[in-house]
Amino acid sequence: MKYGIAMFPSKMLQDKVNSYRKRYDPHYALIAPHITLKDPFEADENEVKSIISYIERIAAETDPITIDITKVSSFYPVNNVIYLKVEENSNLSALHDQLYSGPLEHEQPYNFVPHLTLGQKLSDDEHSDVLERLKMLDIRHSETIDRFQLLYQLDNGSWTVYETFRLKGRSGR
Amino acid sequence: MKYGIAMFPSKMLQDKVNSYRKRYDPHYALIAPHITLKDPFEADENEVKSIISYIERIAAETDPITIDITKVSSFYPVNNVIYLKVEENSNLSALHDQLYSGPLEHEQPYNFVPHLTLGQKLSDDEHSDVLERLKMLDIRHSETIDRFQLLYQLDNGSWTVYETFRLKGRSGR
Image 1: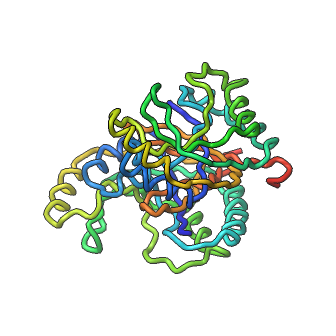
Image 2: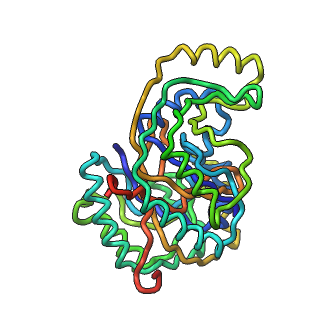
Image 3: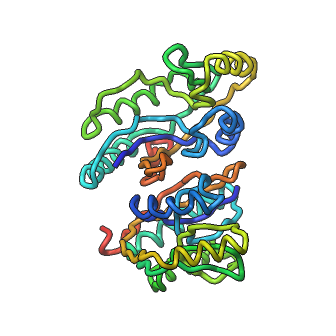
């Protein structure tokens, strides 16, 4: 089965992001707005059991994470993805790194650039039009996230949550 | 915020159900195939904290639940919903009843008829055509489910998982 690990921000931020995704993201209906912590990977039922124990240990030691959003950006020219940039954050990077270690050691297809996708698979023209427009918005926002989720993908491409992990480090208890 | 409580069956069963929902269920993109354990209810952030503690205690005492599916049925004439009927099940009913007690005491809009929706909001003609066709399928299936989820609804009508509860009764440990 194909699994992934992601963090859902507050309802308010999800609603805001969805107002753009609705028009610009063909994956709008497949998963709620999220920060990907680990790209899709294959695992069988037994592997998942030990993966979950491993993640539980990480979550128990990790504090809730405050994210800061300051601007709209794009992965162009690598691909035409427009996103809300989550500012560099050593706590988030440390969590990401742990989710690529131990039983979760997998090759990383990209460097970790935490983000919330606003639009993707846009034509070059649409990409530059939309990016120019969205860059003018004031989207500064901060919030603290105290949980993340292990999900699996259905045959139609949508994602179902399998397990919730609470960040229980000192300040989350 | 509007919350609901649901149980997602295995990927295999979700994929099967989605193959019908894709054509017949306008809520196809809003949530994965599920058994509703508690209909949508309003709660604020503080209420949710005590609700989660309450549900955790229930989940810790409840064994994983085996569901049996034997036929396709419909809520017609109440409404044109076609579903996989989950056979009467005292464990599932007990869990449902607990999710309508304590801090979760709410009026029940319907009797509890556990089911997985295949289609809804069909015209009368389409409803009777589709129901007749699906009733001929052999859809017998059993499986054991060891978790359920608390979800909240976004402004676009879709549902995001907030918390996962594992059924940890004796056999789930």
